[in-house]
Image (cartoon, rainbow, N blue to C red; front, side, top):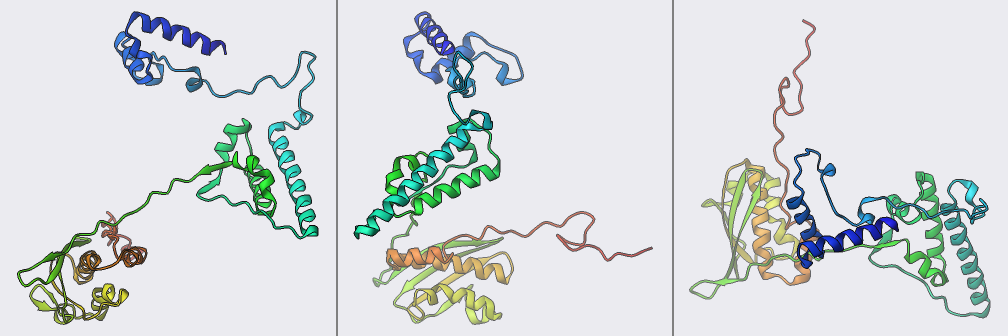
Length: 317
Protein backbone atom coordinates (compact mmCIF):
# COMPACT_ATOMS: atom_id res chain seq x y z
CA UNK A 1 0.00 0.00 0.00
CA UNK A 2 2.88 2.34 0.81
CA UNK A 3 4.40 1.72 -2.64
CA UNK A 4 1.11 2.58 -4.35
CA UNK A 5 0.74 5.85 -2.40
CA UNK A 6 4.35 6.77 -3.17
CA UNK A 7 3.84 6.00 -6.86
CA UNK A 8 0.69 8.17 -7.05
CA UNK A 9 2.46 11.06 -5.30
CA UNK A 10 5.49 10.94 -7.60
CA UNK A 11 3.29 10.66 -10.67
CA UNK A 12 1.23 13.71 -9.69
CA UNK A 13 4.36 15.76 -8.98
CA UNK A 14 5.88 14.68 -12.28
CA UNK A 15 2.83 15.71 -14.29
CA UNK A 16 2.82 19.12 -12.60
CA UNK A 17 6.34 19.70 -13.89
CA UNK A 18 5.69 18.40 -17.39
CA UNK A 19 2.24 18.03 -19.02
CA UNK A 20 -1.01 16.73 -17.46
CA UNK A 21 -1.58 14.35 -20.40
CA UNK A 22 1.37 12.30 -19.16
CA UNK A 23 -0.99 10.54 -16.78
CA UNK A 24 -1.34 7.96 -19.53
CA UNK A 25 1.16 5.17 -18.96
CA UNK A 26 2.66 4.87 -22.51
CA UNK A 27 3.24 8.63 -22.73
CA UNK A 28 4.63 8.65 -19.20
CA UNK A 29 7.18 5.94 -20.00
CA UNK A 30 8.23 7.81 -23.13
CA UNK A 31 8.80 10.97 -21.08
CA UNK A 32 10.87 9.02 -18.54
CA UNK A 33 13.11 7.68 -21.31
CA UNK A 34 13.57 11.22 -22.63
CA UNK A 35 14.26 12.93 -19.28
CA UNK A 36 16.37 10.13 -17.79
CA UNK A 37 18.34 8.63 -20.67
CA UNK A 38 20.28 5.50 -19.83
CA UNK A 39 23.05 3.63 -21.62
CA UNK A 40 22.54 0.44 -19.62
CA UNK A 41 22.37 -2.60 -21.87
CA UNK A 42 19.88 -4.44 -19.64
CA UNK A 43 16.49 -2.82 -20.26
CA UNK A 44 15.14 -3.97 -16.90
CA UNK A 45 17.79 -1.84 -15.16
CA UNK A 46 16.73 1.40 -16.86
CA UNK A 47 14.56 4.02 -15.08
CA UNK A 48 10.83 3.30 -15.19
CA UNK A 49 7.70 4.64 -13.54
CA UNK A 50 5.09 1.91 -13.46
CA UNK A 51 2.38 1.01 -11.02
CA UNK A 52 3.72 -1.18 -8.20
CA UNK A 53 1.23 -3.91 -9.14
CA UNK A 54 3.01 -4.22 -12.50
CA UNK A 55 6.45 -4.57 -10.89
CA UNK A 56 6.12 -6.39 -7.59
CA UNK A 57 4.67 -9.92 -7.52
CA UNK A 58 1.47 -10.59 -5.65
CA UNK A 59 1.93 -11.44 -1.98
CA UNK A 60 -0.40 -12.84 0.61
CA UNK A 61 -1.59 -10.65 3.44
CA UNK A 62 -0.62 -11.58 6.99
CA UNK A 63 -1.95 -15.04 7.80
CA UNK A 64 -1.78 -14.69 11.60
CA UNK A 65 -2.88 -12.20 14.22
CA UNK A 66 -0.99 -10.16 16.83
CA UNK A 67 -0.95 -13.15 19.17
CA UNK A 68 0.85 -15.24 16.54
CA UNK A 69 -2.04 -17.63 15.98
CA UNK A 70 -2.97 -18.30 12.31
CA UNK A 71 -6.40 -17.21 11.10
CA UNK A 72 -7.06 -20.36 9.07
CA UNK A 73 -7.34 -23.79 10.69
CA UNK A 74 -5.55 -25.30 7.66
CA UNK A 75 -2.52 -23.02 7.96
CA UNK A 76 -0.11 -25.76 9.05
CA UNK A 77 -0.85 -27.90 6.00
CA UNK A 78 1.61 -25.69 4.11
CA UNK A 79 -0.97 -25.00 1.36
CA UNK A 80 -3.92 -23.79 3.35
CA UNK A 81 -5.42 -21.76 0.48
CA UNK A 82 -5.49 -24.85 -1.73
CA UNK A 83 -6.94 -27.14 0.92
CA UNK A 84 -9.45 -24.48 1.93
CA UNK A 85 -10.51 -24.30 -1.73
CA UNK A 86 -10.87 -28.09 -1.89
CA UNK A 87 -12.83 -28.01 1.37
CA UNK A 88 -15.27 -25.38 0.06
CA UNK A 89 -15.72 -27.17 -3.27
CA UNK A 90 -16.40 -30.49 -1.51
CA UNK A 91 -18.96 -28.79 0.74
CA UNK A 92 -20.75 -27.43 -2.32
CA UNK A 93 -20.72 -30.90 -3.88
CA UNK A 94 -22.34 -32.39 -0.76
CA UNK A 95 -24.94 -29.61 -0.82
CA UNK A 96 -25.68 -30.22 -4.52
CA UNK A 97 -26.04 -33.98 -3.97
CA UNK A 98 -28.45 -33.38 -1.08
CA UNK A 99 -30.52 -31.04 -3.25
CA UNK A 100 -30.51 -33.65 -6.02
CA UNK A 101 -31.88 -36.29 -3.63
CA UNK A 102 -34.59 -33.91 -2.42
CA UNK A 103 -35.71 -33.04 -5.96
CA UNK A 104 -35.74 -36.66 -7.08
CA UNK A 105 -37.88 -37.61 -4.09
CA UNK A 106 -40.42 -34.91 -4.98
CA UNK A 107 -40.21 -35.53 -8.74
CA UNK A 108 -39.00 -32.00 -9.50
CA UNK A 109 -37.01 -31.11 -12.61
CA UNK A 110 -33.26 -30.71 -12.43
CA UNK A 111 -31.56 -27.46 -13.38
CA UNK A 112 -28.38 -28.53 -15.17
CA UNK A 113 -25.47 -26.11 -15.44
CA UNK A 114 -23.42 -25.84 -18.63
CA UNK A 115 -20.55 -23.56 -19.57
CA UNK A 116 -20.22 -22.70 -23.24
CA UNK A 117 -17.08 -21.27 -24.83
CA UNK A 118 -15.06 -21.50 -21.62
CA UNK A 119 -12.40 -23.71 -20.07
CA UNK A 120 -10.96 -24.46 -16.66
CA UNK A 121 -8.09 -22.29 -15.47
CA UNK A 122 -4.67 -23.81 -16.03
CA UNK A 123 -2.08 -24.38 -13.33
CA UNK A 124 -0.46 -20.94 -13.66
CA UNK A 125 -3.81 -19.16 -13.61
CA UNK A 126 -4.83 -21.08 -10.51
CA UNK A 127 -1.59 -19.93 -8.85
CA UNK A 128 -2.55 -16.30 -9.53
CA UNK A 129 -5.82 -16.91 -7.67
CA UNK A 130 -4.54 -18.69 -4.55
CA UNK A 131 -0.84 -17.63 -4.64
CA UNK A 132 0.42 -21.09 -3.76
CA UNK A 133 2.67 -23.45 -5.69
CA UNK A 134 0.82 -26.62 -6.63
CA UNK A 135 1.99 -29.95 -7.95
CA UNK A 136 0.46 -31.47 -11.06
CA UNK A 137 -1.45 -33.93 -8.89
CA UNK A 138 -2.88 -31.12 -6.73
CA UNK A 139 -4.09 -29.29 -9.82
CA UNK A 140 -5.51 -32.50 -11.33
CA UNK A 141 -7.37 -33.34 -8.12
CA UNK A 142 -8.95 -29.89 -8.00
CA UNK A 143 -10.08 -29.99 -11.65
CA UNK A 144 -11.54 -33.48 -11.18
CA UNK A 145 -13.50 -32.26 -8.16
CA UNK A 146 -14.81 -29.29 -10.15
CA UNK A 147 -15.79 -31.57 -13.03
CA UNK A 148 -17.66 -33.82 -10.63
CA UNK A 149 -19.50 -30.83 -9.18
CA UNK A 150 -20.33 -29.50 -12.66
CA UNK A 151 -21.72 -32.89 -13.71
CA UNK A 152 -24.19 -32.84 -10.82
CA UNK A 153 -27.76 -32.00 -11.96
CA UNK A 154 -28.00 -29.35 -9.21
CA UNK A 155 -24.63 -27.74 -9.92
CA UNK A 156 -26.32 -24.37 -10.44
CA UNK A 157 -26.15 -23.94 -6.66
CA UNK A 158 -22.37 -23.57 -7.08
CA UNK A 159 -22.43 -21.51 -10.28
CA UNK A 160 -20.67 -18.49 -8.75
CA UNK A 161 -17.96 -20.68 -7.26
CA UNK A 162 -17.30 -22.58 -10.50
CA UNK A 163 -17.36 -19.43 -12.63
CA UNK A 164 -14.35 -18.15 -10.69
CA UNK A 165 -12.27 -20.96 -12.16
CA UNK A 166 -13.48 -20.71 -15.75
CA UNK A 167 -11.87 -18.66 -18.51
CA UNK A 168 -13.67 -17.57 -21.65
CA UNK A 169 -12.43 -19.03 -24.91
CA UNK A 170 -12.38 -16.54 -27.76
CA UNK A 171 -13.47 -18.23 -30.99
CA UNK A 172 -12.51 -16.40 -34.14
CA UNK A 173 -15.07 -16.80 -36.87
CA UNK A 174 -13.54 -17.96 -40.13
CA UNK A 175 -15.07 -16.68 -43.33
CA UNK A 176 -13.90 -17.96 -46.68
CA UNK A 177 -13.35 -15.27 -49.29
CA UNK A 178 -15.54 -16.12 -52.27
CA UNK A 179 -14.66 -14.73 -55.69
CA UNK A 180 -17.78 -13.33 -57.39
CA UNK A 181 -18.91 -14.98 -60.61
CA UNK A 182 -18.01 -13.43 -63.95
CA UNK A 183 -19.83 -13.75 -67.27
CA UNK A 184 -18.49 -14.01 -70.82
CA UNK A 185 -20.02 -12.56 -74.00
CA UNK A 186 -22.55 -15.39 -74.25
CA UNK A 187 -23.67 -14.92 -70.64
CA UNK A 188 -21.97 -18.08 -69.42
CA UNK A 189 -20.84 -17.88 -65.79
CA UNK A 190 -17.22 -18.64 -64.93
CA UNK A 191 -14.80 -18.24 -62.07
CA UNK A 192 -11.01 -17.99 -61.95
CA UNK A 193 -8.65 -18.97 -59.17
CA UNK A 194 -5.04 -19.93 -58.42
CA UNK A 195 -3.52 -22.79 -56.45
CA UNK A 196 -0.07 -23.65 -55.12
CA UNK A 197 1.44 -26.96 -54.04
CA UNK A 198 5.17 -27.06 -53.29
CA UNK A 199 6.79 -25.35 -56.31
CA UNK A 200 3.84 -25.98 -58.66
CA UNK A 201 1.55 -23.06 -59.50
CA UNK A 202 -1.81 -23.51 -61.22
CA UNK A 203 -4.43 -21.18 -62.68
CA UNK A 204 -7.94 -22.49 -63.35
CA UNK A 205 -10.91 -21.05 -65.22
CA UNK A 206 -14.05 -22.96 -64.22
CA UNK A 207 -17.06 -22.59 -66.51
CA UNK A 208 -20.67 -23.36 -65.64
CA UNK A 209 -23.09 -25.41 -67.77
CA UNK A 210 -20.34 -27.67 -69.08
CA UNK A 211 -19.91 -31.33 -69.94
CA UNK A 212 -17.11 -32.22 -67.52
CA UNK A 213 -14.26 -31.48 -69.94
CA UNK A 214 -10.98 -30.67 -68.18
CA UNK A 215 -8.02 -29.35 -70.17
CA UNK A 216 -4.57 -29.03 -68.57
CA UNK A 217 -1.90 -27.10 -70.51
CA UNK A 218 -3.77 -27.71 -73.77
CA UNK A 219 -4.11 -31.47 -73.17
CA UNK A 220 -6.93 -33.61 -71.82
CA UNK A 221 -6.33 -34.34 -68.16
CA UNK A 222 -6.40 -38.10 -68.87
CA UNK A 223 -3.35 -37.66 -71.10
CA UNK A 224 -1.59 -35.06 -68.96
CA UNK A 225 -1.94 -37.10 -65.74
CA UNK A 226 -1.36 -40.77 -66.61
CA UNK A 227 -1.27 -41.77 -62.92
CA UNK A 228 -4.72 -42.73 -61.59
CA UNK A 229 -4.06 -41.19 -58.17
CA UNK A 230 -3.43 -37.76 -59.74
CA UNK A 231 -6.67 -37.97 -61.73
CA UNK A 232 -8.67 -38.90 -58.63
CA UNK A 233 -7.11 -36.00 -56.76
CA UNK A 234 -8.12 -33.67 -59.58
CA UNK A 235 -11.74 -34.83 -59.67
CA UNK A 236 -12.31 -35.09 -55.93
CA UNK A 237 -13.70 -31.51 -55.46
CA UNK A 238 -16.43 -32.16 -58.06
CA UNK A 239 -17.23 -35.53 -56.53
CA UNK A 240 -17.38 -34.09 -53.01
CA UNK A 241 -20.10 -31.55 -53.88
CA UNK A 242 -21.82 -33.87 -56.39
CA UNK A 243 -21.07 -31.71 -59.44
CA UNK A 244 -19.36 -34.20 -61.73
CA UNK A 245 -20.00 -33.35 -65.38
CA UNK A 246 -21.56 -29.94 -64.64
CA UNK A 247 -18.47 -27.77 -65.22
CA UNK A 248 -15.69 -27.36 -67.75
CA UNK A 249 -12.20 -26.42 -66.55
CA UNK A 250 -9.29 -24.84 -68.40
CA UNK A 251 -6.10 -25.24 -66.35
CA UNK A 252 -2.53 -24.10 -66.76
CA UNK A 253 0.16 -25.35 -64.39
CA UNK A 254 3.91 -24.87 -64.17
CA UNK A 255 6.71 -26.20 -61.96
CA UNK A 256 6.89 -29.18 -59.67
CA UNK A 257 6.26 -32.83 -60.38
CA UNK A 258 3.10 -34.60 -61.45
CA UNK A 259 1.83 -35.05 -57.89
CA UNK A 260 2.40 -31.45 -56.82
CA UNK A 261 0.88 -30.20 -60.08
CA UNK A 262 -2.24 -32.27 -59.44
CA UNK A 263 -2.43 -30.85 -55.91
CA UNK A 264 -2.08 -27.27 -57.17
CA UNK A 265 -4.80 -27.80 -59.79
CA UNK A 266 -7.09 -29.39 -57.20
CA UNK A 267 -6.73 -26.40 -54.85
CA UNK A 268 -7.38 -23.96 -57.71
CA UNK A 269 -10.46 -25.92 -58.81
CA UNK A 270 -11.79 -25.99 -55.23
CA UNK A 271 -11.34 -22.24 -54.78
CA UNK A 272 -13.02 -21.55 -58.12
CA UNK A 273 -15.83 -24.01 -57.41
CA UNK A 274 -17.02 -22.24 -54.23
CA UNK A 275 -18.29 -19.34 -56.35
CA UNK A 276 -21.09 -21.67 -57.50
CA UNK A 277 -21.92 -23.14 -54.05
CA UNK A 278 -24.04 -22.32 -51.02
CA UNK A 279 -22.44 -21.32 -47.67
CA UNK A 280 -23.13 -24.71 -46.06
CA UNK A 281 -21.43 -26.50 -48.97
CA UNK A 282 -18.44 -24.15 -48.71
CA UNK A 283 -18.13 -24.93 -45.01
CA UNK A 284 -18.20 -28.66 -45.77
CA UNK A 285 -15.39 -28.23 -48.28
CA UNK A 286 -13.36 -26.22 -45.77
CA UNK A 287 -13.75 -28.93 -43.12
CA UNK A 288 -12.68 -31.54 -45.65
CA UNK A 289 -9.46 -29.59 -46.24
CA UNK A 290 -10.18 -28.78 -49.88
CA UNK A 291 -9.79 -25.02 -49.39
CA UNK A 292 -6.58 -25.15 -47.34
CA UNK A 293 -3.15 -24.72 -48.90
CA UNK A 294 -0.78 -27.61 -48.18
CA UNK A 295 2.19 -26.01 -46.36
CA UNK A 296 4.51 -29.00 -46.71
CA UNK A 297 7.72 -28.53 -48.67
CA UNK A 298 10.50 -30.83 -49.81
CA UNK A 299 12.92 -31.41 -46.95
CA UNK A 300 16.47 -30.36 -47.71
CA UNK A 301 19.37 -32.77 -48.05
CA UNK A 302 21.60 -33.01 -44.98
CA UNK A 303 25.40 -32.91 -45.20
CA UNK A 304 26.99 -36.28 -44.55
CA UNK A 305 23.83 -38.09 -45.69
CA UNK A 306 22.63 -39.43 -49.00
CA UNK A 307 19.37 -37.52 -48.77
CA UNK A 308 17.09 -35.71 -46.36
CA UNK A 309 16.75 -38.78 -44.14
CA UNK A 310 18.55 -41.59 -45.97
CA UNK A 311 22.06 -42.43 -44.77
CA UNK A 312 24.97 -43.75 -46.79
CA UNK A 313 25.45 -47.51 -46.75
CA UNK A 314 27.72 -48.32 -43.82
CA UNK A 315 30.98 -50.00 -44.64
CA UNK A 316 33.51 -51.28 -42.15
CA UNK A 317 36.45 -50.20 -44.31
